[in-house]
Length: 184
Image (cartoon, rainbow, N blue to C red; front, top):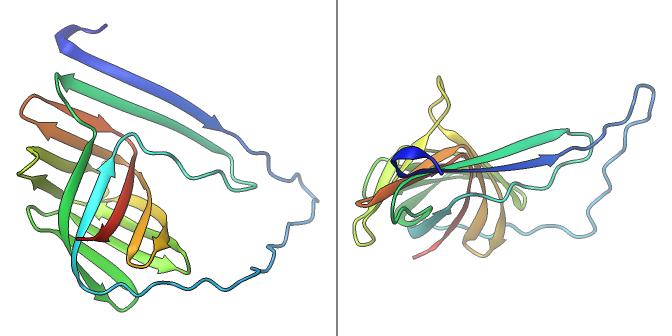
């Protein structure tokens, strides 16, 4: 136990994969057996859910991964999740969600059923009494998002970066989160 009511939770997950050695032939990707239909996302009101710590995506063959998940709680009653109202605009093939209470911006680009993007800013859920702040690394303006389209007008995935959740009784921060976007 640490002084000042600070509890540090350190979860170390090592996912190591071995890549092919020199001279080994590369593995060719297999052709998909069925085409993926990407749902149409329409502009409107959505709910962005964030919860920490996140579950990292599976390691890809040939990519050595070392993922250390670090979470810090200060004060009693801190939470590691929030539900935020966002307004989504479709800009070409990119989806941009802006929080209705704050400066939080979610920007994602679908690549078939896969998603890549970013999350930045801060937002509040006044009814729940929770504030969320994205804490990018020094010199960066956002954290990375990955994920998949899960059904018509919904998507979910992993946020690889620090997010802090504040309530009147404490704060909780973690360097990863799970996220989902669904219609309101």
